[in-house]
Image (cartoon, rainbow, N blue to C red; front, side, top):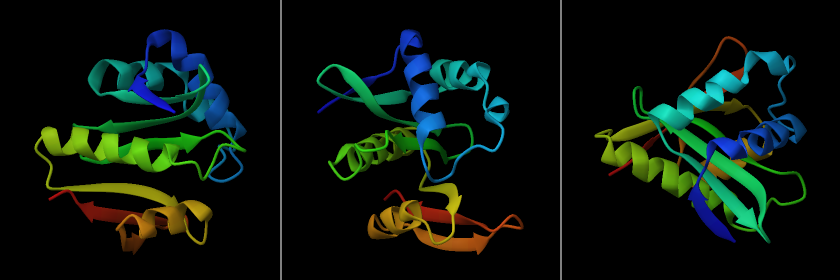
Length: 139
């Protein structure tokens, strides 16, 4: 497993992973266009997890608002430590940007919710769409 910053040439792989996940699927993939990935590439750090030279996961945080924008691992590649490592990198980026806590949203009752809770994230509130707003101290 290798973690590295994403290159613009990786964006197709990121979009493919995002579209292939079974949880937190986009009902309309056009809601997260290429321009969003380019924005995060310019204004934050998109981290990539590679195995055998293949991109198998990615994360991104938003240092402008203290959020984790994305954390996705390709189906069949979960459980190998890629997600934990990517999440740690994104949280470290937010800490360096001056944030004392981070936030994200995820679906209630999902494997992702269990993953974040095991990593110390707490429910702040339930959103009107049923998703959960989670937060975690970065200290």
